[in-house]
Image (cartoon, rainbow, N blue to C red):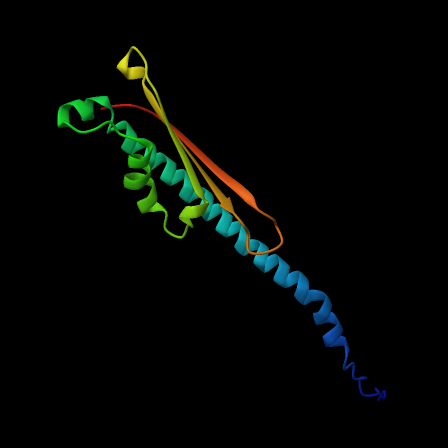
Length: 140
């Protein structure tokens, strides 16, 4: 029978390996969280821009004249369609622009809603401006 000496104990090997692996593991984990949060914000901005454009299209000139209401303004679109859907966003970092293009033919009148959000990711990525734009034809 062969004699095998007992294995040598490597007490510091685990600590050294963890010192190399843990920073990479945490960096990948936090980057995944940041990318997921950025994707969520991008989808939310797109949804808010579409909802703002949809709300503006059904509150056009015909809506104003038929319901004896004042002309829809940028602030109306923001307060009624965009801001209520801004859950999880800081409204002070959200900028918006709403433009209407009038045409001689009603079927060609359009409204454009552009949203920009100044986002700072959780870690070392710097500031980013997320932008979403939606264009729809005025229907009412």
